[in-house]
Length: 404
Image 1: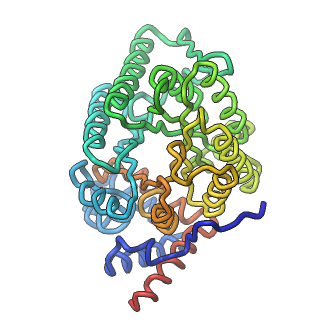
Image 2: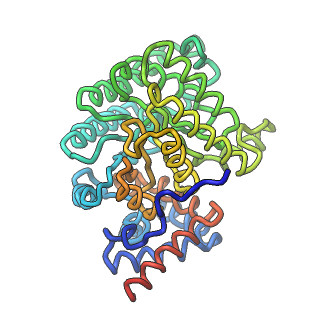
Image 3: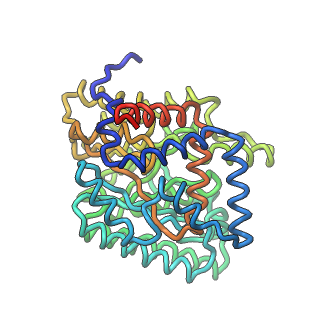
């Protein structure tokens, strides 16, 4: 579809105004390295081994990829950056980047940290949302065991716990309680909770739990958002049936629309198990469903709160075109754009200047805990066709403008 470029997204003076000359040079060097696919694969493996062997690599990680994509090791360390982004009308989605935990004590501690994040966010004028992963609150194997017994339909949400042992049922009850405590605090403080999508073999459980939280907390405003990964061929239909259930129950459906971050893992698992993968046949099919999902949400903004989480300039302009065609304001309260911190500054800052609600997704946490996130960012930049080249082109365009 031919669209108009309503908001110019290539203004590098605005895109990088928040970066010093030194920061711009460092970003140039980092993206140059990430443009070498073989180097990213080697670096990811070496980083994993270095952490396992407890080699002194933290300072190197902190001054390079960590600094580019993460807000700090603690909540307090994010403050200066949050304030700087606020100067440019850019909001923040805070995410405590803990992954791979397995003990009940860890899950309880992470729940308490998410509650601290909510209280902190409520004290800032530009932090309206936080992100959470259910795998930070629950054992992966437990979510996987329930996956075939968790269903979201047009009529109701069912999580059948009969396959679980009595101790596992108690464990699941604690997962539900943690999730609801987080959402209840968010509702009280006026903060939204984005529940991340994860692997397909635990996603049914996540979807059902997320919908139960929506039914409890989204009656008057959007507190809980589900994440819809459009690299899966079944997600557009899932978005529509979830909306039917939301309307039936008189709630606002929170939809964070993404292409997704687990495609290679999905494909590999399907091959190993000799199953048909749930992923789209090609990128063009994923792009088509992504844009159809955006169109569906824009058509139902009275009952859907939409977050367009994308680094794709066409998809962003497509959303803007849809809003304009429907005579809807760019700062519609149910439309929010988001990009990961450290990527696509040209989209974020130019949208902000045009008056859109737009945020940086900002993770924080101890270096060891956020390494899986960092490795995904490096691999994503090297594997998405043209992503790193586009970042490099824009950074170098700004360096030329500054005569660096």
